[in-house]
Length: 67
Image (cartoon, rainbow, N blue to C red; front, side, top):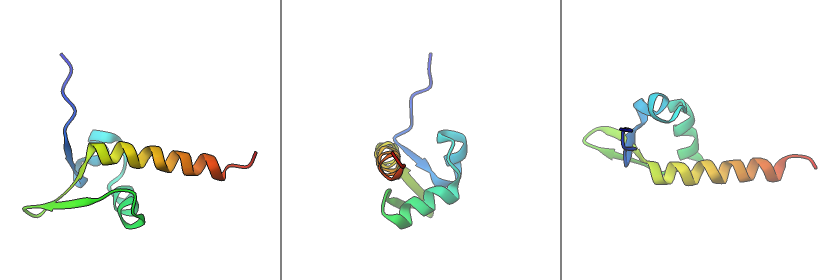
């Protein structure tokens, strides 16, 4: 049986869970792609927002690519 995907992920666990370095998550947050929430001192992000941010970033890169 597959492990269910978490709804929220700690930024410090991002590399293990989604394969993206925590510094990248913080850069995406600073650029406005993803919102980081603080819960009891833990920085967390929503998997739903993560997927949407990843799609937006991929689309932006594709649009910038030379034809």
